[in-house]
Length: 583
Image (cartoon, rainbow, N blue to C red; front, side, top):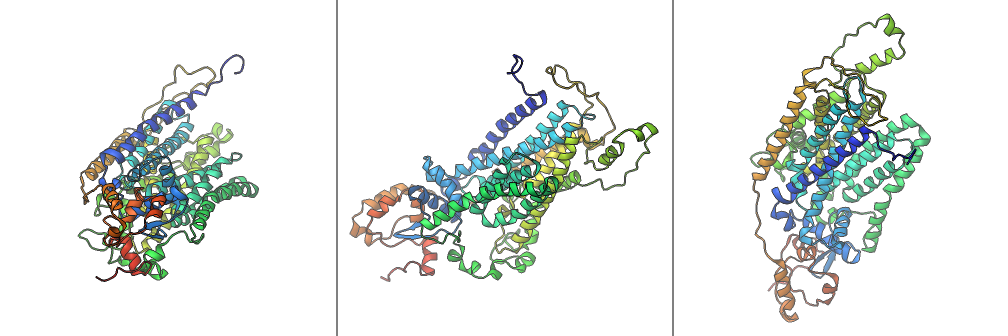
């Protein structure tokens, strides 16, 4: 309270807050409905695909029950093959009462959060860029462009076939993509801020969690974080960088320390976070087999990804995924064709105009005006839809966008090179970099819509706001008017059509059964009978569903023969557990 009046937010800030609330209210239910209802699959409840989702859920049950990391394969406890970061997150849901067959819904929450985050980032970028040019666009048009950009980005991720396919099962891909985006956002905000340390803590904590979930992804995003930190160093100096780096590093160490403590408590090596070498020695025993140039140029004969069940070069596979080139399964794409246009829009937004621009000689009065040369230089560095120089805050935003674009390019190159050399190609490995063309396309359309029509003075503005600038109607390229609205409508239509086509696809449906009945019947058998029969269920699946808690396992004296599941066959082949006796 000041002078008897309640302090109020400025009109433009209130509008931005209301717009952000509206975006979240629209995008979050849409993303959850796409994953939980419209494209829901029995795979989520059945803990598929296996072994990924099954072992994530089983390890989460072990962490929640007694703070140890293991798989219960009959009477044997063995280490899981995957890093413990995602099971630790799922263990929190288990402690809150989420059942094992409902853990797939947790992934959908992360997907909805990522869709909302992309919507807010796209809207914020348009607000800063279009809202800063007061001579060419008013707040109402900036709000319209920002809302359109946010809706496009949120809709694009909420209904993207690839994002929905991995977001409707208990996999770590979409949560890891969210954490990676928070890593870049927090580090980028820390590079732009001068006194606020919270973004540095967000970036560091996100890096630590990403390393616990996907150590390879953390390494691939580290160069982008260095690029953003270098931008902050150039803007604020070395002492500022050291202070922010200390906050970032301290936050980044929290989750890895928790992981190391969990592994130590589980009597595992604290520095070996995954068990790939144990579970897949064929591919992980030798680095030359795990990564090889042959996979990038010719593909891997053991993993067909092309049409007609044929191997294709990994470079071609990831190029098709990242650019949206048809030829793969529907769930391999964020969208078809338009991602390539999104990458192009991103280049046009951050690079100087590629065509030669004729400059007019300023008149005597303009030449004497202070800042005339700076304004002309800013106009030459305009983005695709700009028709006048940027205001200072928008110019700072454009500079930050160029640094962010460089970080995105480094991230894309790192992912493309690393996974092209990797023996197993999968579209979900590049899920996080696919957010970049979506953001670029949404921001480009939003900036065009912000210049849709000549502005009019804002009426009814609260007292204390600065008077609106006199509206101008400079000549605009066609793409900065109705063309941008048509492009946004076409993009939204393509997103919806791709989702509907993906929803019609029906994969392999595995028959379901009530495992609880089988486990209860097996427990009621006398111990001599159990010892002479084969276990009628998968023990890892029973653990994942919470049907084999540690207290019950300690009471079982006779397990009988183990069923020939994937885990049992692998452990027998590795002589970790003994082979069954011959009759």
